[in-house]
Amino acid sequence: MKLMTEELTNEQRLLLICARKVLTPSQLEQAGAAIAAGLDWDLLARHAQHHGLSPLLYSHLQRNFPQAISARPEPRLKLLETGVRNLFLSATLLKILGALQTAGIRALAYKGPVLAVSLYGDIKLRQMSDLDILIDRATFPAAREVLVQLGYQSTFGYSRKQQEARLRSDCECEFSTSDGNLLVDLHWQITAPHLAHRFRFEDLWDRRRTVTLGQKSIPTFSAEDTALLLAIHGGKHLWERLSWLADFAESVRPTPHCQNMDNRGLDWRELKLRAREARAERMLLLALALAEDVMQVQIPPEFSAAISNDAVVQATAAGVARKLFEDFRDGAEDFEDKDEDTEDKPALQPAPERWLTLLQLADSRWDGIRSAARFALASGPREWQTLRLPDSLFAFYRLLRLATVLRNAPTFFFPGRRPT
Image 1 (cartoon, rainbow, N blue to C red):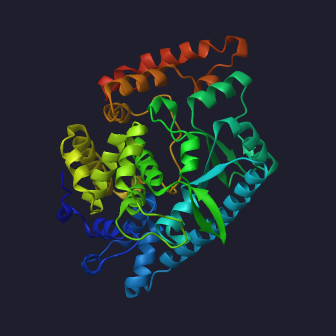
Image 2: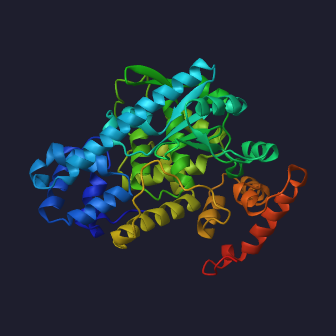
Image 3: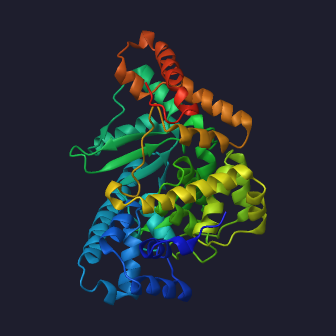
């Protein structure tokens, strides 16, 4: 699969070039040529916002092509707005992690500010809207109490049986301030169990490293775990955003990392081992295929050969890349103004094409079967809100879930058919 970059518009080409921390002389020359050829700046701005790349784009333009944006206040205002927001999120993250530590709860900072400083070296260069923190599932009740004492409201307001079921079948719970302006996602697993990926908090904690944020050292994932988690995050959403791919590319790009992180560099053998243990080898190969082809990241020949030998990964990567740039051509009027870390919450009936692709990307047929079975049998908030039942009848939710999935099953085989 090779992306035909000559078919891209000037706006597409410039945004793709700027989706990285450092521009080479050749890339600077290409960016200058795209600007000189003429741009629709409003269209470029909407594309950048949709793909979470506004900070990187405007930072490169201000540093390297100030004359091109001298008459436009939007880039400076956007960078200022992003910087203020991200500093606020960073301060909030430090406060929450400090409170969790005081309560004796181990926590790993996930995405958000830690990626901004570890991958890009600047808190202003990554668009974000919420905070993500990973804890041991056993400490969730205590961690929830810490957040409540800090003034956050939990959406985990369910019965005892529902709470127990969600801890088993989900991976996170959302908390928010009373005004709804700040969201905190408290994770106890990387992905929902039905995706079949295997992670143990103890392993992630033992391999942790630290990031300096606001003159304080906070724990986060190792270089290999960071790359793998970014690959899984992008993969489960089929890489709908360029910013996710930019993050992953920076995590594996063979350049020195920032000085504010305790980092031994990326160990490719370790990364491969972690992916195998997590049952996420194909997710990693998909991310590497896109990073190599779209972001021009050099990857070891061993991984390139594995990609070439996997028809499913090649076909999926080609489809993702094609859809990504089809979105560019569809026009920005349909783009939503989404922030970088805002994820689609699990739905009862996801897009059939997406789920079929995720099943194909499972590392084995058994993993795919297990994934489908867990999804079909694990009830969740949607069922609980649709039909209110006492805990004594909680088992009926599983039947309701299965019946709903079976009723909508034809959409998996006939995508044009609307769910009932």
